[in-house]
Image 1: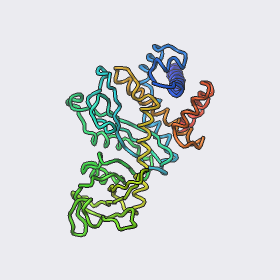
Image 2: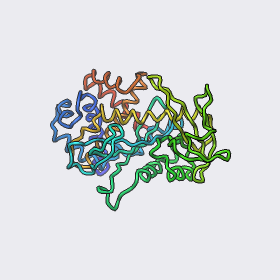
Image 3: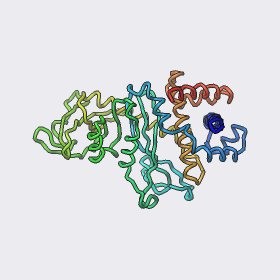
Image 4: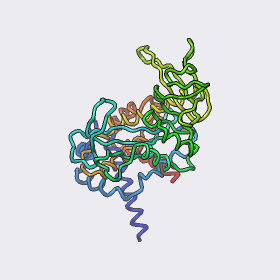
Length: 352
């Protein structure tokens, strides 16, 4: 009898999850619960009640996402990044604090979301996340972003094979790189231009080191250098933007390869930036108005699932972007979209 009740409960929440995903995709503008309820032709309160009850169920536990990518994980990299979710007009939302938004270059009220995703360059699947709180909010439970990132990395099952980890300069600290070297995890990351390294008897910053000076027709070059007792590989890359303006950036890694390969790998990080952008602009990450932190977390988990579905549709349709997939799906009737969601849900859970 108990197993029957549990099975029926899971079926109910699966149906709700798929309907909620349908509502998020079909809602044309802000993805608030009232807007989603209107599209689904249900009451606001019915959605709120179900969202509140969803937490005990395992539909979005990280192992489901890890199991989903397991068959093809060896073809890509893990990537870690954080993003500010602004909640500018919601001072009463639990967990919000003053955070610095690198997009606007100013402090704002919001949540700081740290995400680990898997990517192969054409497909990006968010897997697991943590929320970072400043000391005023976290108090005795305060953790640095580096500590949270390490916890997320350790949560990745050893059975999930990927080529390594990609991250930007924020996480390229001595603490993080020592941790990754100790765990035998390969990485490619952005390095600060003023980092002082020693190579060929010369101890200078990356931007001043003679071994990293590009020749006339060179676009990248790699040297092996020592930094705080770590022997690492540093790459200089000359970039050209859409306007034709050039810039110099530096990368760091802990495994030997060609400079072109380091550059190629680091470019894969763009996938998680696209995820955070789409999550905020098109999937309602910043639109949740609940003052309950658990409700905010449920919305994030639902959003991970929706994005995995959109990535699957992108591959299926051979589309150029998730945004183009969204536009195509929004032209469907809700019944047609539900058929696609049910089909994906079977694939998503077939390895679980």
